[in-house]
Length: 80
Image (cartoon, rainbow, N blue to C red; front, side):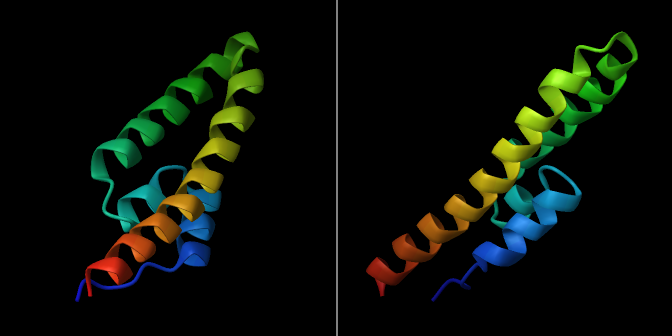
């Protein structure tokens, strides 16, 4: 049986480093893309537009990591 993913751990990881929760969930491409997007947003903060997008992407990553972990667990539980 595949290992269960803790939705709380995934959310906390993404809270501190966007994309890390997705990587923890096994969604490597999504995690790397979120890390890259937030790095770009960091650079965009120098021209102020990053201040708009950074919190939006940050919140999306935290919520997505939590929901994805729950979906992965539901899918794994149905298989076994």
